[in-house]
Structure formats: C-alpha cells, structure tokens
Amino acid sequence: MNVVTRNTSPRAMVLPPSLGYVFSAPSDEYREICRHSGPTYQGATVEKRHAHSWDGVSASLDNVVAEGGYGVSLDSEHPVIVIVLEEVGGVLQLLDRASVPRHTAAEHGTISVVAAGAQVDIATKELRYLRLLTLSVDPSMFTRPVRDAVSFLNKTRLSFGDHDGLALAELIAEELRAPGVNDTLYLESLTSALLVALSRVDAQKTKPRYVRGGLAPTHLRRAQELMLQEDAQPLKLQDVAKELDISQAHLSRAFKMSTGQSPHQWLIERKIAKAKALLVEGEMALSEIALKLGFCDQAHFTRAFRKSTGLTPLAWQRL
Image (tube, rainbow, N blue to C red; front, side, top):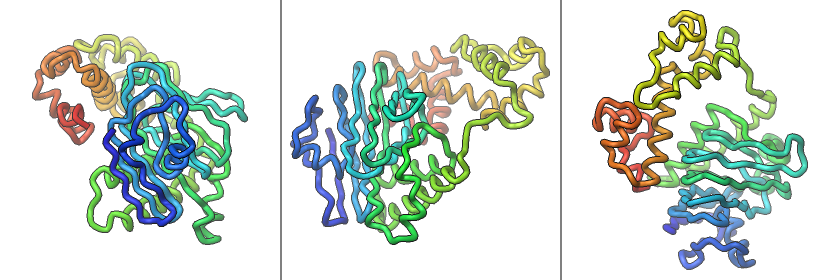
C-alpha cells in the first residue's frame, strides 16, 4: 500500500508503511494509529492512501481494491464524515444498529455522518474498486460558536446526497492526492465550507423528492431500464419516448428535471461506470471496451472518459 501521510497537528500520528497491510483483527497499536489516519479494511487491499491531519480534523483518501466481500472499520473516537467518491462493481452497505430501516446503500456520491460511538457496520459483497474519503472531526478542538454550528455531527445520518457537499469533498480529495502551496490552509478552508454545507442540509432536513415537472417515478425507472437494455446499440430517445407514450421533447425536459442530467449525459455516465468495472478487471483492450459499450471508436471512448473523470482510461487504471 502506498501511504502518503502529512500531519500538522502534534496530536496526529503517522501511519507507517510497515503497518500498511490489512489485518482481520488489527492490533491495538494499529487501531490507535488508524484513529488518526483512516479506516481499516478487512478482506480488501488499500492500494493508495493519502492522509493529512491538522487541529480538529484527520482526513484520509483511500483507493481500495478487492476480489470479493469485505468490511470497513472507521476506528475513530470522534464523529466521522464518510463520502463515497467512486464505486465499481457494487455498493457499500451501511447498517445502523440503532435505527429503522437498518440497512442503507451508500451509492456513489453519497455522504454519511457517523456519530462518535455509533454502532454502524459497513460492508460489501461485490465491490471491486472504492475511492473513499473520510474526515474524523474532533469538535472539542473548535471554538464554542463552531461547535454549535457542527452539532449535526452528534447524530448519525447515512447515505444522503448534497451537490455542494460532494463538490467540496472532491476538492478535498484532489488536494490530498496532489497538495499545492499552503495545502493545510486550503484544506482547512474547504473542510470549513463542507461542514457549513452539511449543517445546512441537516437544518433543512433534506429528503429526496421528485421535482415538479419531472418524470413520474415509474416512467423514470422504465426510461432508465430501456436506455440500459443494450450497451452497444441502446434504444434511440424517440423509441424510449414512444414506449412511454410521451413526446421526445417532454421526455428530455422531464428526465433532466428528475435527474439533473440530460438522457444522453445520464447514459454516458452509466457507460463510464461500466467501463471502470472492465478496467478494474483488466481483461479487455480499450478498443474492445469502446466497442462493447457502443462508442464509435477508442478515441471517442477516451474523450468521453476524460470528460467524465478528468483522466484518460489508462491514467485512471493506474490510480
């Protein structure tokens, strides 16, 4: 495992490469280190970890690979913010023993807040690749006004979405991966903005809802099913609209209102997700992946992949 750990707090501890293996039963020393450096993964391999700590916050960005099911232990005595930045081959399952319903799927782009001492189990059966950002936050290190503002950290809330929060999480992850000048100051600012964004979500008690003018839930599910039937030759939008007995213009407009993406953008994102799974398997050439997923050629596939991820397929594969 590649470990990049930087600490600016005297209380933070460094995760040494010699302890970079996965243990089914981590030692007390390893658990103490991981309290400050990130989660442990039972049954999976952390290929890369970028960690940074400063007063009040310990952040960890992990690239995790596995062949089968595995569990995740947060190992923190403080509240932890968990952001799923990328998943290939499955989804994380979170189980809060103190709530009903107990099981929650942590899909790509979802955020979870795990309160200190909460009994939350995290596991997956099929996930092949995971990019996970965790922030362990010690509210006692903050001033009284800030502690009051982040009181939402005292309540466990699993798998919710927030566009602003996710955008800030991606910026934090990128700074952890490739730190620039004054990186600690930048990370502190981003984390403060993230905490404010999440406090607003908590205050609003935001729940998923269908936007007025969007597709009815049954129509949305059916449209997505039809669009995903054939990778190489998906149905044309006019055929999907005909199947739903609505106009193509209404389908396009209502689909975007429901998902935030046009049908074409949504379909490309699904194809890129499938491409990532094939890249993780490593058994097909890029030209074969492009053909399988219905791209015109390898160049078209590469352009679409770069537009979606900011990286070429080969660069993403080397992460």
